[in-house]
Image (cartoon, rainbow, N blue to C red; front, side, top):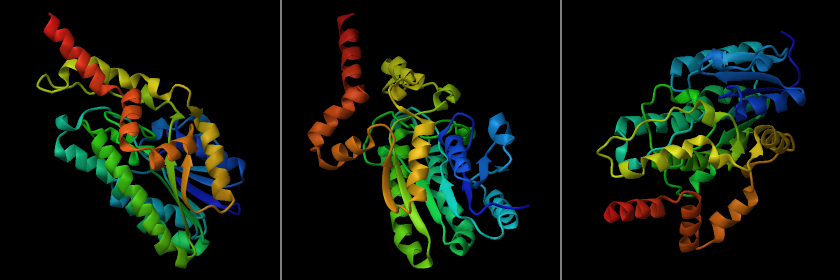
Length: 306
């Protein structure tokens, strides 16, 4: 198969998400795109029928699946890969006290060990191409937002019964630190590393979200309607489109950027806030975004008055 000059593999390319938008942005730059999904039925028709796209069924939790994907890319891209984008993720909302540990571990496997395994499998192709690895972390790695587990696509979570924002935030913080460490380790090998700190981006992720019910024994059961309401998409109000985000990110990749890049709605303002504002101010800001304390207080006052 005749290949253009550059190739990219992007994980998590379900319809309506950031991965799909990035695939389209790379196509416009002349790349050949390997777009991965866990379930082939989740790919948009426009992406699946594009001439310069290969759809790859990939489970980043399976070493065999990753190895098969690496073999396919090596065979079809001439033994080289210019860009690897670790993008998979999901959308879930539940408090930490209601999470089985095994589900938390599985989420960590997806958000941290999955990109780690992808790096190891595709490193020979990236090194040969003197390419670039892009790891999509989250602003949640820097902000301890309660009940908020927003990321990229939800299909990766089909095997998770439920999970916790505390675990999500921690896994994304781990990925951000690992990615910056890889940057130093891969630089002598000629491979660039970019760590994306993604803030709000409007995608179809909430429309795919399956709300898990809080158990009646939960300490948060009395505010369950508030918790469930977070999955209605309100947290994406005013966010930039996935296409706008993708164009900005691909531009950074194309111009040779390295290190941490903040992207998404008000990304630079968020970076300033997380870096410079005192904890007391940040706590008030986070409570404004996710008013868990005030909602709980109102609920208890209402219970007392009855």
